[in-house]
Length: 223
Image 1: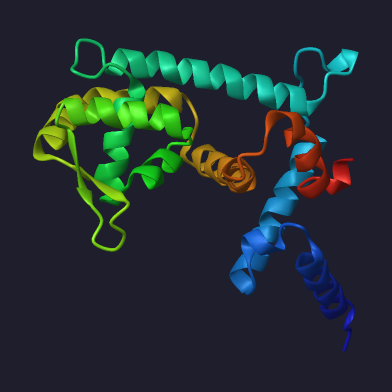
Image 2 (image 1 turned 180 degrees about the horizontal axis):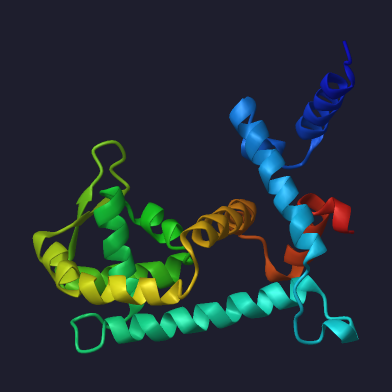
């Protein structure tokens, strides 16, 4: 019996368990299959590397990705403004806070602020505006008297629902002409980036130390 294939498979499993992506996929056959699939896709992408402006002058993929993310954020904000035009909402943050409360249920002020990746002062201002509109209410936590739990009110839910058709249209426009498969792949990649950046953001590292600390602790291989 020829065991060459078996040895190759065992070697491939060892590579998988040693890879930096192993924690993201996890143990088991399902994780291993996904890893192989994505690895082969990466090989295909390398063989068909896209062109980008400035590539011939040494512009790297990190620069391109950062620029595109900034552009996409600006496009999304434009569509969000259109979604709340002539509505009771003043900013997109207001309806995003309500959407989070509707989707995830009551939570503390800081949980709501952190879920939206805002600093405390900006988040508190948004919460105050929502309270003034009576779209949310706050109650003292039964577990911690120092904390306030934020709830979505009936008025807030109704106000949000009136605008949801336009909001859904805006979110569909942002994803543009991507296919279902491309959307799933983009979610996977953006989620991977989000899971990388979220703990760093939560540390509240001072701007003067941020770049050096992240490079040293989170990206040692890039130093």
